[in-house]
Length: 504
Image 1 (cartoon, rainbow, N blue to C red):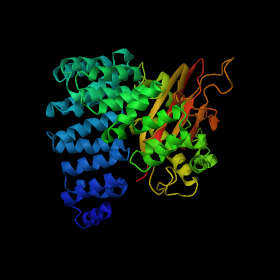
Image 2 (cartoon, rainbow, N blue to C red; image 1 turned 90 degrees about the vertical axis):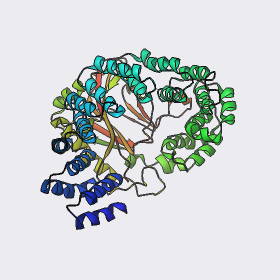
Image 3 (cartoon, rainbow, N blue to C red; image 1 turned 60 degrees about the vertical axis):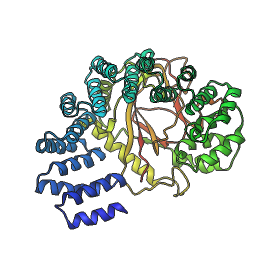
Image 4 (tube, rainbow, N blue to C red; image 1 turned 120 degrees about the horizontal axis):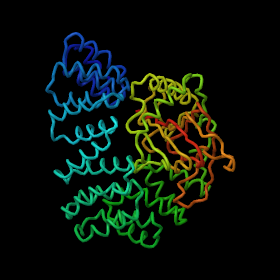
């Protein structure tokens, strides 16, 4: 392996910046940061080097050790105050740690005035600091000068949705398209955003408008097929899927499977699923395999989801989190947005922005530590390894890493739609505050459901598990399993959720 070779070289040449840089690069690629980090720290301490302190900070950041990473980046910035990447890294780590980062991003912007990633980070820092109006105005101003910056349009749409301006989310896209209607990247970025946020009527209308400006674009058929399928226009969707060119079929494979399931063609869906599971889209396909195999009584259904007693864990973290009220106060402060993410499952509430577990608040660090321990115990209790299985075929000898972490605040009537987490390995729900039971509510109001498919598919599959929420209760389950919540009518609910990263 590349890491082992780089480690051997670095051990032989412990003061060589090039060898240590190669080691850090390989460590990040192969999730071996904890092994490489001591060598980088010692070398940076022996002969102060901006590059080595930067690499040290990057390794610490990857391990969610942001309190240490901030110090390392500060040392790097002190040694190389005009280095653009160090300035940006310093600002980014501070933002992820939950510290004020506006001034650090302003410094990074002075060094890299046209860097889109730095601009987006600056706007995120403004939002995190309670300056959502300034963040919105900043993005609007940049997009007026650079209307072809698609990443900026997407970020502005997300920001507007989060601050309660969902009806204005795509306004900047529309303005740019009006100015440059023949520019393909603008249309495609808009289509992707509308698809991810399940705004299929708008997608259908946008594709129709685009045809008069980019009529030869093959992806138009794909997005029109997606819109038709999700809107239930079965015959039009069939025709459009059949017309798609090979280069456009990959982007629509999940929606074609959804279309087949929705229209009752389970056998055809199974054939498509078997083919797609051999592709690099397998992580997105497993949830639909679970549906199709249950509907068709395929014995692989039991193989995929059968051992729920060990694939799903219910853990009481109360003893590991002795001061839940303090944790609740910290989390409530983070829910500054008025609206919802465009592309998330929350309905009737808000979700925090940025990775939760990278924050350096003592309460969050204690929370992360307790959760990491629970995850490690859960992993050790999983069924026997199976190299073909999406849950059981992963390594179990690596430290717990998170691909995402956040908090959700729900008001009365709020819930999560049934959804999955294809970027994760193990997903979760941890209950911090719950609404009092309301007379007249169903017994299972607010309960977590597992195995109940997206209702928009129209398939009759009941949940395989329903789990009652309790304060301090942590539920762990495979990320490919469908999950959601039953609505509750009154009160508030505060939860923490995360995805465990798929081990390399």
